[in-house]
Image (tube, rainbow, N blue to C red; front, side):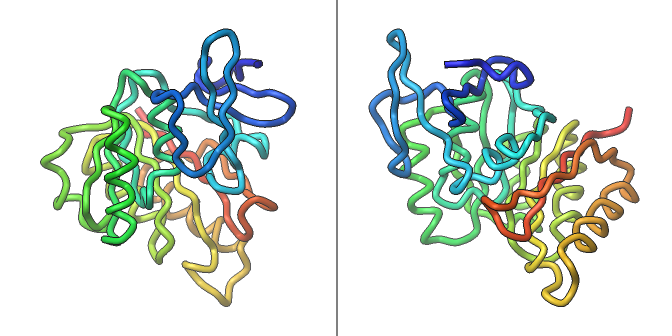
Length: 220
């Protein structure tokens, strides 16, 4: 098992597959493969099921998460990727915001096994609705497939004074008539116009069609 140095030893690779150290040994979240090496259990992190894993798999190296990061995760769904983020930040907190009630019920079950995950039923376009749960966070991670994806990221970074952000832009959710490349460029411009620095834009094909991860940091 090889540590990926740019992740500060929080993500590992073995024969081209990514892994995180499980916070809840013996427990699968989405049927992922478990592997035990020298008494430590690792969970396979499938890039076909996680845009953050796809970003790393496709060569992304801007990784703002540390063991103690406080993360606001927008669009948490049933908790697949958030559970890996919780593995990566065992001494931190992952605030998991999900709007759909059916997915939220599954998210609650995922969070029950991981004390550093908090499920929050809320609308990512209205950060004031869940501001009472966290005064500030270190990272905002967004996977919300709707219009204004870049603006939603910036609004939440401002609301929670986050220094870093990542947004998985789904081009077809912004404009079905425009090329994905033009949508990604537009999203980058929106973020920069809001006063943030874009440090990476990376397409997620073939794992996620017409998606790109945009990595952002607050300018000092």
